[in-house]
Length: 206
Picture (cartoon, rainbow, N blue to C red):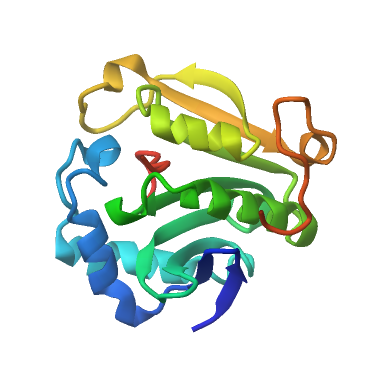
């Protein structure tokens, strides 16, 4: 197990092959999967044979980017995961930010805390030049997390998804933040901290 970073309330670490059941439980909650599949759980065999192997494979392409298991800093309880991975394989200049948290972790600012910490680490240590995040237009809670994390609205678009779920007719939204914007934030953005201070769930995430 490799520790990635910690915040006041979170510890982010690499996933291991023994973590499959944690993801099965997370993806088995219809509320968690609302903006991904319309609430349909991910089958356990898909988690074990596709989702987790995909997560594990990303840790070396390039190092320091991928999916991270989120634990309560004091309790060690599994809370979900955060995603911070290149949009183009092997190229760290642009990364996608995302997360998926258990319902017990909703509403207390943990999503924003984790996202801000990842943005800071990306711009200060990992050579990231642009962070992007996507979710359904109707996912108001996730859009607030993007904004609180310093990202700005970029566009609304229609995704080419294999199935439609409630709200999909309103499209998807992209938010983004560049390193230059992070270094010189506007009045509605959090300043670069050089440290760390309902879930963002883009439908194409694992």
